[in-house]
Image (tube, rainbow, N blue to C red; front, side, top):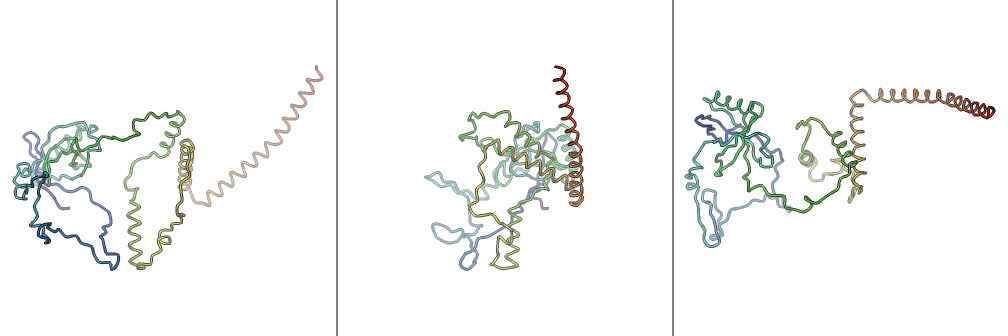
Length: 318
C-alpha cells in the first residue's frame, strides 16, 4: 500500500505523526467506450472554446464565474491557502460512537503510526476503545476542508470523512408521513419473516453478481469471439416480459415465511447427511406411521362397539 498523505493528529499538546492510506478500492471491471462501426477507442480532448486548440493539464487553471465576471485561480494560489498548507488532523471533540449517523460517512482511510509515534498512537487508539468514543476531527485533504470521524477497527485507527450538515438532504417527498394502518397479524407475520432471515453478518458470504456475470461474459467473448450465446453462457430461461404475480400483503408475507422455513429446513437436512440416508429415513418414517395407523384402526372399531353396547344398556335400563 502507498501512503496518499502524511501529517499528524493533534490532541491538546499531544502530536501523533501518522500516514494516511486508502482503506477501500473498487472491484468493478473497467470498461471503455469504442466506436460500434470499427471498434476504435473513443477519447475526449480538453479543447479551448476561444482558440479551438487542445489543452494539456499543465496549462489548465480553475475559475469562478458569477455570471458577469470570471475569476481565474491558479494551483499555486490554491496551495498557498493556510488550510491547504496544514498537515494536521485536529481533534475537535470526543462523542459517543452511536451519535455519528452513518448517512454522513463518506470515504474511509487507514491511519498508520509514524516511525516515532508508536506509543502515542497506541495510547490514543486504546483510549478510544475503552471509552467507546469517536473523535470528531477537522483536516484539509485535496484542496477541501474535511470533517471526519476517528475511530478504531481491529487495532487500527480509521479516519472516515463526514459530510457537512448542509450536505445531507431532508426526505422531502410524498408517502413518508402518510398515516398507514398496520394490523397486529401483519406485524406478527413480518416479524416472523425477519426472524427466519436473522443471522450474524459475514461480508464474505456476499458477492457482486453483476460484476461476476460481466467477467464471465468478457471471458466467454475472449474465448469464443463475438458470437456468444448469452442464454447458453448464463443458463437464462426466463421468458420475455415475464411479470411478477401481484399478491396482497398478507399473502406475500405468508408465502415468504413458508419459503424461508423450507429453506432453513432444507439446509439443516442437507447438512445432516446424504440424500440416500434422508430417503431411507423418510421411508422408515412412512412405514412406521402406516403401521401405527393400522394399529389404531381396530382400536377405533372396538371403541365404537363399546359405545353401542353402552347405549343399548342405557335403553334397557330406561
